Amino acid sequence: MPKPLDLPFDPIARASETWKARFGEPAAMAAVTTIMRVQQILLAQLDALLRPHGLTFARYEALVLLSFSRDGELPMRIIGERLMVHPTSVTNTIDRLEREQLVARKPNPRDGRGTLAAITAAGREVMRRATDDLMQAEFGMGGYSKQELEDLFELLRGLRVTAGDFKDS
Image (cartoon, rainbow, N blue to C red; front, side, top):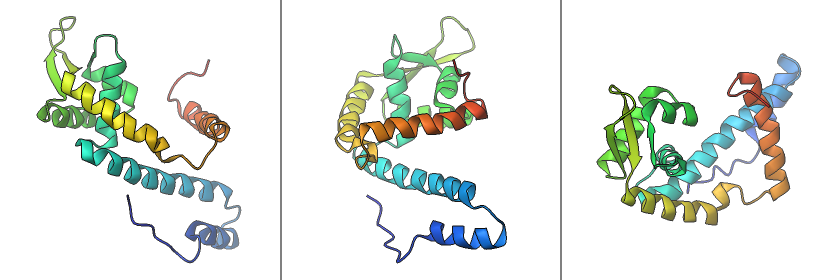
């Protein structure tokens, strides 16, 4: 796990005070800065939990996505769409998983030019063990109740809808 900073004050709260004096209302700046810091903390914690499995969170997400698919395989383009990442990131992630024999590439029979990434039996086993560890650690969110987590999801979902991640139904 990452080493705690143990600062004697909250630097985001302090920045908010200065922001208010110099620029005006600090709520949006404080919220976005907090979200960015929380993302750093969670990613470091989750990557530390996944490291013994030879995974990063990005690689773990790809394995889970493939395991959710009907046949355990998806076109590279779809992986990028579902994980909401650039095609280069998908290629790098699948390259690393393939080197570890957790994923295999194969031609897409529906598209002569396309490639499918398929989770292997070893990939399913690593994903299962990694998931057990993440679930045990509550994905780093153990300090929150189920209701708080659901509220947080809904609150941040609105930002994603506004950004155009998906059409809200």
